[in-house]
Length: 266
Image (cartoon, rainbow, N blue to C red; front, top):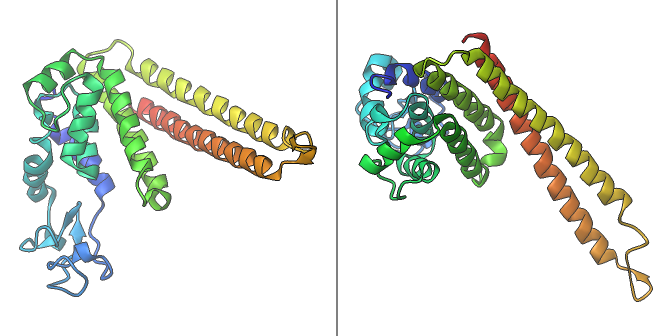
């Protein structure tokens, strides 16, 4: 179990939450929660003035933010009792997208009743799960949620890399906690799987595009006339499918890079 593992998980999450910022255009940086309202105190380690107006944000230390993250995210997600590695990916998901959403995704992955509250059943199911598979499945669900957000186009690069990195680190934590005989070998194996998947998806994307451009033409007729509406429809579908494959290939490449990076220090 992950008792005491917050000290290992929190620095990983805080690295993505960032240091001190005080952009006047960001309403979260104002104590009143709106631009120009209250005082401009900024955000540090993901702790925003809008939510914590009485804190001296610029001078916040890791020691001061730790109990905030423990109270608002770690404990509500039952992370203290989750298997090592699964605690990290659940915690980071919760910090990034909300504890209820992260809890429901965890419950779906381990086969517990989905109510958004991590209790005894969820913890029991998590303990009995294939932890590596649970970590990877939870990260896949998290990425799927992020892709559905309106802001995905703006932040997809950073979000995708963050999820890939947290997944690889989570698997590494699980391997270390389970005293696996060859943790580096497992991580490199996962990197290889992701890399192969990426190559296959790019190849499929190229094949799909070729079929779309070469297979649609004057042979698509209706009543002896070229059915341009059908042609356009087919081309649109092909472009969408090819685009999805290309993006999925990119995500798997990022996963491969993340696993390789973690393997180097394991």
